[in-house]
Image 1 (cartoon, rainbow, N blue to C red):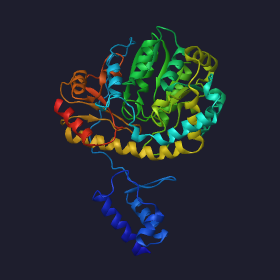
Image 2 (image 1 turned 30 degrees about the vertical axis):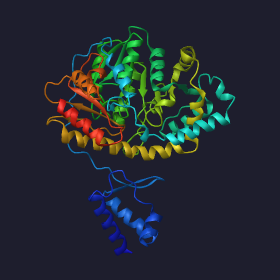
Image 3 (image 1 turned 90 degrees about the horizontal axis):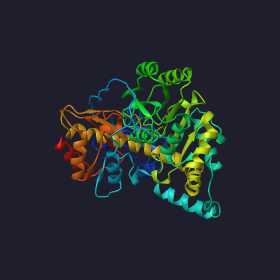
Image 4 (image 1 turned 90 degrees about the vertical axis):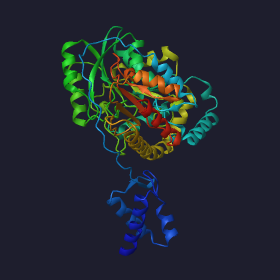
Amino acid sequence: MDILYRKLADELASLINAGGFQSGDRLPGVRNQAQLRGLSIATVIAAYRQLEDWGLLEVRNRSGFYVKTKPAAAAAPPRIVVTTMRPAPVTGQDMVLQLIKAANDPAVVQLGAAVPAAEFLPTRAIEQALTKAARQYRVRTANYEFSPGAPELRRHLSRRLADAGCAVHPDNLVITNGCQEALTLALRAVTSPGDVVAIESPTFYGLLQVIESLGLEALEIPTNPHSGMSLEALELALSRWPVKACVVTPNFSNPLGCLMPDAHKQKLVAMLKAREIPLIEDDIYGDLSFSHARPSLLKGLDENVILCSSISKTLSPGLRVGWIAPGRYQDKVEYMKYVLNLATTTIPQLAVTALLENGQYERHLRRVRGDYAQAVARMIDAIIHYFPEGTKISRPEGGFVIWLELPGDVDSFLLAKKALAQGISIAPGPIFSASQKYRQFIRLSCACVWSNRIERALVSLAGLL
């Protein structure tokens, strides 16, 4: 067996190194491989384990053996932009509407909006779940599922949170129309017009739009591409300004993709708890870790952290199912949800429940994490190859977006307009800042199916630069 398993391992290693198997490809199952080559199952397992030891394969629980994603080529990370921290109203978000419209145009190469291509989503399983919900709950789906939402869904979400080390009773969850509504409800619950909210910089432009719509002022805190919001800068800001709330995305933030270390999370929670400042956690990318290890939640450190999330980045943006764990603001959030739009649509809630219940959601996650890791690595490699020397690129540890600092005197607003004229959508840096910083930065979404069309779009962007 020793000779046979080593011979098979050497043969498969040669295939992988020659490109016969690409990063993220699934190798034939152990039984199939054994039958194909006339070997014992034990021999094939030993060969696969040898490839794993060599760093060529990775095991995904209950899914199989996959070619390990190769690290992307080296490139310097984007710099941290530090300016005078001063509360300010949000401006310059009109470009976002063009970006969103472009996301719905099939003629445009979609690199701007952080919306996964359908190929990354379990569309067939979603279709079956929706059909089953409509048939099984015919009368129920015709009625409102008033706040706090479908009890079955809240029970399954509570179990998933418990698995992540976060105890939230089902009765303390409120189902929302995506994470955007959850963030809106959270900020409405803890602030009044004119209040100051501390946020990461850069941050998700959807949060900036919520802040603008509620008449709040944003206090931008410099954020490190590796460790997240600067706690030293936040502490200084808290000593100078009357901050009423703080919003962070500690797990694979958008657009940086950074993962806040556990010690950093503990210090952040303690800092805000001591000052009695509400902390709002956006965990929309938390299930998309490239390492397959689910990172910890701020909510697990303090039950009064307000947790917001959804399945929009993992399962389907179109289902519009999100949730909020409001802590001590439960009654207020439930009432505001009712006033805002009565209820979240019933059928999607029941469909998501079914996907959680039958294990399809977890199986999908095991596959798509590797798919996103591969997509990000491939995009970074292509950018290093085609873009001008001096381009700096973030190194996300999860999610599917990357943050680029462009060399020279580049105006990313102008670049975005010229790119859109050529049928390419990108997200210019200033829309990720309340004060329109990051003029030399762009965000790209990697959740697209790689093709000659995508590669040509990157070549065109490089030409514009």
